[in-house]
Image (tube, rainbow, N blue to C red; front, side):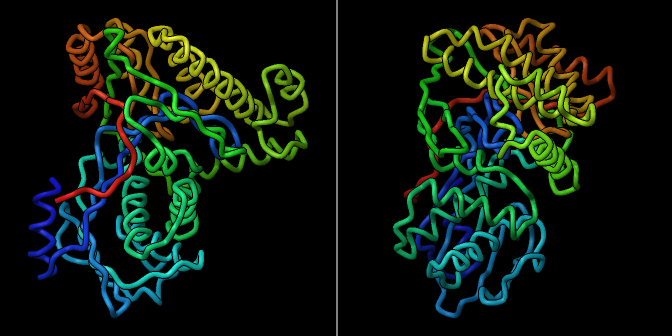
Length: 382
């Protein structure tokens, strides 16, 4: 992919790129909708990437092209403002805009992007794109920006320029993860730990099932969940739902005004506890024990946070019935992907079971990939 990208860049822009940078998508093992509630998350970097070939320009013009699309998007850097661009180019331009807003030097750029992270599958293709661009610009401009700060800058680009109110998890995973480890991140304190996750050593695998049901985070459903969490925190007089522990949960639920708010709080409190439980399981070297934790997470996301979909529920049901140790939706929901923890020999049977049930339900054909914990964003040598 990267070799072809260099040649394609020369064909599109009639010049050599200054470099190529890549950033991975992510699988969130557990900790869904907890990041914007100041909670805990446990993602790892996926072995799928977005790559960007970039060259600086002297005229402060931004020219953006994609290997997946025809044409080119051109826009003056000094005229970038939220709302002027839409689609994939907004994520690229938003990072350039964010650098300038943060007081960092930016130039004009020729940018060509490619990638193999499935788009709309809940695997953070947008964060991978943002992080590849952010790392590239920081190195091209000689900016000494620590990686967590780069993640925050990329998040602000998505929040303020694109208009998706995401938390920090996706960008942090794409920039901070290391191979064979999950990232245990405390979103409030920004403290993080790399927790070993070598499923293959225990004869296990993590199967990702892309249901083909595309989620759309900017359509209001995601923002509505954030608003309900903020409202619950106000009613409970706490800074964020992170502050409602399992020990305080029953008292908190009794104090809330609506059943919807009670559902949202119950999910966040129990999901934070599940992240801590999952970390302890991995530290103890017993990843097979993760299965029931994953399944409880899915039930909570389905019933309390109400972000699942018929495709996601069907995939989880089929995987578990076919022998998966546990399964859950991963990502923000409303479509996208599930993950299933399986014994390595059961991969084919579980894939066939999911495909069969999807055919009976009249859903699109699912796609499968085996997730391996990989390294974060980096410069790539052509």
